Length: 584
View 1: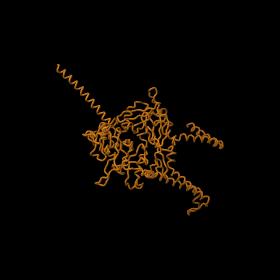
View 2: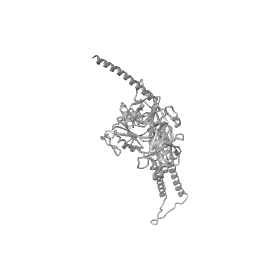
View 3: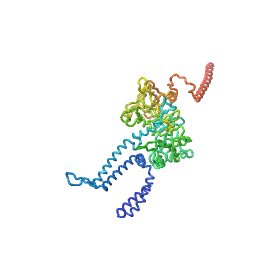
View 4: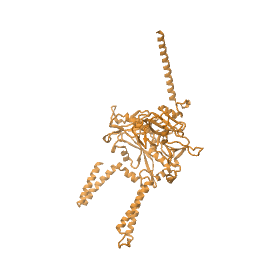
């Protein structure tokens, strides 16, 4: 590729010199092959120009159609006025000369065309989301397609697993246990591994030279107890020893031709590759990249889930349709539907009653809140009884922190007539006739800090989004949703040190009754018991027999047997001790 660029530049220079030396025929004959070389360079380096060909041209067909139409119409009018009709001569009263000459007429049409083009740019930029496909007209079209594929929930689905560890704490544990100067972690993404919500991250090379020369060295998962499990491709292990220079032939942390997105764009160009995460097949890490395609709905482009790319450690790229990807053995029970597209879909519900309502009237309008002081934003990945779900808790638009609707999208199957968007609407209070006040994530901070177990902690202060260094010891992280077995929504937050060194407390604030139901737990087992049973474990409770699993019964029986054996042993030792005392 670089040879083509170098040769084409040299050829252009030589052709230019020959042209200046009055050798145009020779210059043209030399120029043609070098132009072809330059075209070849552009083709081979096309991933670099993705922003131009995809974002600017492919995503905006209506804009370019109207641009060409403006040029053609103005050019045709100019040609007709010049060749069909005699130029009109206007003699102004203050001087005897032609007012509108041919040269001025050219500038007149150019100015008119430029003005119309600028007006088109402004209009299209405001309405049609030229680079993101999330303009007002795009969103209206998206909502119109999604409206028939929604269903209303009467109760919230139970959360069958919790993400005990926040993102920042997972990064701390991962980095503190890495211990390799040449390796660093990349982006962290949530996945479900062995029924548990964990964080997964690629093991990237550290430094530009290593990223250019060596390979991404597998991936690691950080579990809720802080343990780290690493998955390496077979190529990275030789004679039982790890080669930290080898791993994946194309990955996130590699430069230029070996970079993951470069390889994907060489294969399929006119799509938008969303987030990158990792799944496992027989402990071999696989890179999974869902992507969005776009369909033309005049005058805009509308996104949809077009497929999933699976990149194996040897660099093999397998491209699947959504249906094919859902049927793969290693994807069962895992996320596949793009998180980015899920958020776009939910944002489109703000246009439920059209753009006029969205901008001016605000009737039944939602908005997705930006969770303050948190790296991880909605949608949240939740394990549910029907598989993983993307969950968004939307507030009423405007200056409010009250929840309005809660959305669920199947994170495995996506959205289709067979897999609907589930919507839970906050109930209406029969006494007032208005919706009940359920707090959103940004109101949960103040209620959580008032819990008795943590109210005396000295918090790491935050002012206008900026943290004050050196002030306070404890942080409160990431309000995320958790729903107990009785369908009650809690905002679950973690108390950690300002260095993110572990989880000291896990706090729960009831979204419906934040003043009354607020709890703090120190152990993960207490958190899981709280969500499963629906009450605080410290209260006196009797578990229904059907809610005790066979594994729990087996553990209790083992503990009882151990206790009896200990009691018998202790009794024997006690009798021996008494006999020794009596003999003395």
